[in-house]
Length: 226
Image (cartoon, rainbow, N blue to C red; front, side, top):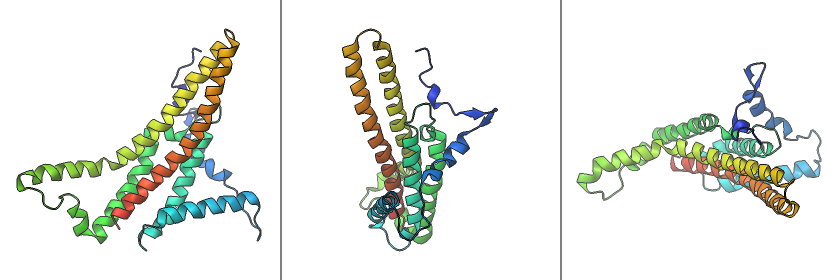
């Protein structure tokens, strides 16, 4: 009960060296692959989900935007598996670290924006000044649109970090309350434990939804610039 509430969000170390890199590289090892002509049910289901997700995200893109399909599918698989593994007891979730989420969001956002300025410079610049803007408001609107553009990767990273962190904190608090009530009142303990199970199911859904939302927003930024 005296454990620090934020102890689970501290990056782990092994012999004084950060282990976050090893943890980030671990989820891809859990993705099953097959060398046989006929796949089993797990791999078939996995391929069907990947194809469905890729088809839904790439439907709005042109030929140039569809070149990012492999990157976007890899991104959603990585974030989803990382979020799900973070729900295991005594595990570390890299997506609760704002620095890591920024390291993922900024290059993808920058790549999409640079592609937009290279291929459609007029359309990219037109976003900074909506049509029909009164002349006195032009400097202010340009500044506002510039800030809104630069804040996009921060919004991506903060959204993912906040949602995953809030869920973990809530599970930690309810789990601690369940443990504390177990020696005081058994009926109350069962009620709180039921709430904890329902919250865990909700967090599994949130882990998958946040991976999809993050990737979808990157896909929308790409669509606006291709």
